[in-house]
Amino acid sequence: MVDELVPDEKPSRRHPYLVVLALVIFLESALLFVALGYLIFELGSETPQSYPSAIALTVLTALAAMWVAVIGIGVLRRQSWIRGAAVVWQVLQISVAIGSFQGVFARPDIGWLLLMPSIVVLVLLFTKPVLLHTARPQG
Image 1 (spheres, helix red, strand yellow):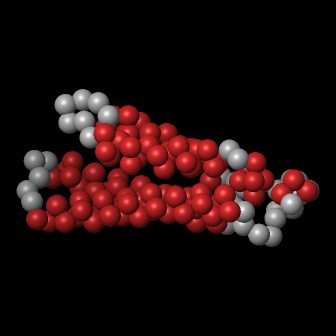
Image 2: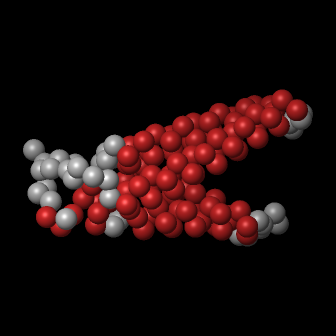
């Protein structure tokens, strides 16, 4: 069915790969919103060593959570720009995961929790059905 597509038209149904991709991206966004809630709680209940750093980290987490949610919405709308945005986010997430595996404060559990969805998203982004469903219309 997907192989019979004319480049000028998009398929009418969402492919299961596209749905799984959106679900994983929305899960990442939800976890970022949870982290944001935790940061806001900590900002109100504890005294940070540096208020500007704590506020900056909270704002950056809020922006990241909203941006990843926008990427998930773009996946469901089959926008072509989501592939680049999702790749950038996954590369950033993989770099944090790699950092979680090493160093004095290494947390391999967090590293694996960040690495596995990134790999799933990167694989799904480059499957033929997802590429066809998110292709920019010709003309």
